[in-house]
Image (cartoon, rainbow over all chains, first blue to last red; front, side, top):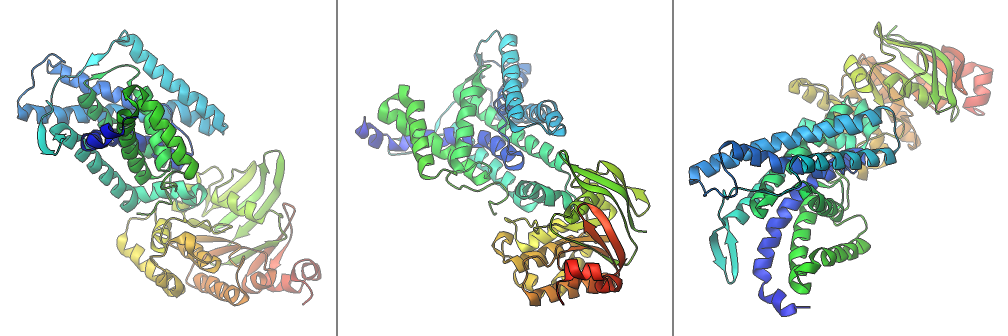
Length: 316
Length: 236
């Protein structure tokens, strides 16, 4: 174990971990939102993310950009980023709604047991990722270098780049808006009502079907944003890009307390940090193993997750 | 008739909970449904509000067949229920719970008017406006559930055991308020185990036994009916 390395690189590891954690947190919101309302783990959420990560690349491709292009001018980068975000958000949102419509809604109508949902969830996930795999010959797809990482400020040996700032700010902003929507708007109140007491919600005139569509859509939008950030950060995507990150995001949601929006944020950031600290401490090859051992330890102490409450019960 | 049930049967899986219930509630009435535990009182309420699908029979509300209508749409038609066990939203404040009652409505001025009305009926709720529902006492939750049901400005208010778990003084108070709500123009269908209170406040009542209606009449008639006295009123 390399303690001196961890201490020496604490600053850089922290900022890298936060950027990584911000992406995981955005991704995790989709699991937590759907679980809060349906008590269902939407395993196909990883493919909602996956299609978003391709959607922006396809749009950038329309402008003739690939991984070998030069970085465009600042103004074009802003425009391209916005277009990429819109494309990813739209495609991820549609995918999430589509999965709910095709894989879950028919089962709900027939009062299927929870295991049936688990099977269709895994089925939908595999179907989408394998289809992408076939269509791309399982090759990686490179991301055009829209943003060349460049130091914005340096504290000691911690170099904070423009890309890291973009990722963290965008993630926090999205989560802030989502939080406001869930807690302040009429529709958000409807979502919380269904999460807290579905029968009572129906007695208030809440259309449960519409609330369910809405949480899938919201989760999809967040995954779309996460997907663009992921592309820019990692530089490539692939048909199975959603898989491992999906497990991490799901873990983050459970770690924070599944069903709890702020829990997803906390869980995501914490997981990002843990991974980077663990990589430094035990070596990069142990990154996942070590961080998951730590997660299990945390869950042993707090089995319901750090913030522990369900979507509705989490006040404010 | 504002509400009419005709030969309604309802199944919980393979168990038949209601065996062809027929009852009616007229505009402006307070109608009580009394009976022992498990007689099917709450089930009847759930059939009317749409939380459980009926197997056979029809439910007509305000001239419209609502037998197959979704629960949330029945609220829009004017049916509102304060459910058994109160069913308040534990993570929402008193204010938010009441706002949920007005979920289907958009007119802010009218909603505020009704909030004032509920706060006048239940001053306790005004004091607790910001408190989270889950942390309130049983009696306060009951007031909240009734107040919330009023927030949709219902034509028909369904009250399922509004006196359940309340102290005797509060029971009086809740029934006083039910009468007051009725006098303000809301039709009430009331399910109660407290038959004495229910019958003395209701215009008419039905007695339910194992999923069937065995007796009906005015509140006063049933109060003096020997068999009702024996079964539901205790030795008075």
